[in-house]
Length: 276
Image 1 (cartoon, rainbow, N blue to C red):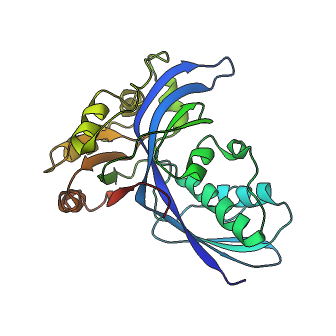
Image 2 (cartoon, rainbow, N blue to C red):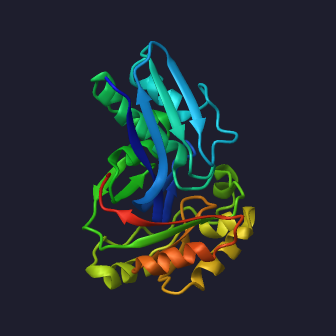
């Protein structure tokens, strides 16, 4: 079988409410998760042993051994099987857009196809975001990431993802949270772009204020996004530090991404209705 290439799209929390905390320390979330038309790419080729090569503009510092979630995903799926995997890395590290989880989910899909096996239940063992990345389409995510519920179809939306280059570790952000018992999302219901924006205005990212205490530059990113023409909502994704702006027109999104500082990572992409 010849090698194949598959896409690992960025995961974006358009809304993220922290609704509780379990006795084991895990936080309960209620989030609207979507996927963007920008991300990493993985190529899989048959081989006797497992190997991983990382290249691309964000390859620096990414491990090529058992510390990488792609490697862990391969071993979890079928221990002892071989494959030559190449990860073309474009998403920033510790960016709150599920880069490692998206790569792991892509590895599970690609290797399952190449090896002729099914992906078993329990992918959350690789990380809380791996199941939603396997799902690969807009969804309401609750619990600690294991409860996935369908949402109404999204209207066409363009997203601009921006990261100023500061990694934001998740632990300190959750530790800086003032409240963990916030109200859940309103019931997902919208009609058209304006209706979707109106629904989102009634939601929040409960981690955003805490993340800004860890990485104050998030404030600058949000301010720049908010000031671009056509931006209807600017917010942080996940636990940071990637922020996003939502646009109705592709031209406005592309112009906004272009207007960001040259040393920031910025990408305009459509919000995906399903995995391409």
